[in-house]
Amino acid sequence: MIKVLFVCLGNICRSPMAEFVLKDMVDKLHRSAQFYIASAATSTEEIGNPVHYGTRELLRRKGISTAGKYARQMTRQDYKEYDYLIGMDQWNIRNMVRITGGDPEGKIFKLLDFTDHTRDIADPWYTGDFETTYADILEGCQALLEKLLAK
Image (cartoon, rainbow, N blue to C red; front, side):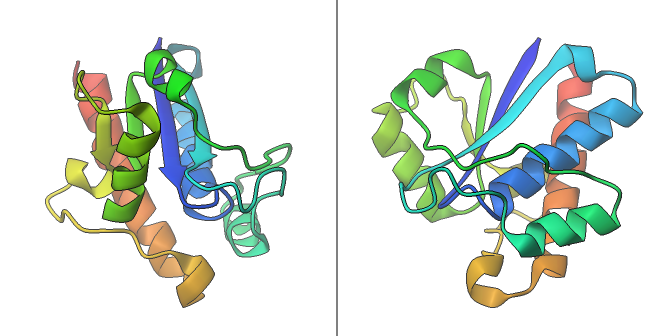
């Protein structure tokens, strides 16, 4: 089983969007049993809160539910539990390395590192632009899934 943890600052916008987009992709390929996909935050600000309404509504329009998801913080134990820990921007990566105490196994990546367009994914909490965030996450998840299925 391939275990993927998506991470952003609060775990209410970008990382749950990536979590549910990738879950939808693997489900449509009938490969859900081969994956465990989750998301977490680097901060404690939103712990216990549901997915942001902007992410929730955008995904609902795409036929993807976020029901039952509440923000949680990433832990050092997550490094042991997951094969891939994927942040949305460079700030997330720095915080993830701080939480885990390093990345000796090379498990920490930025989502768009799997694409030809390595860059940060803008936080729609600040930009209000959930559509652009979705497009970036979709691109990243497609590239990530291609890599994972090629293994």
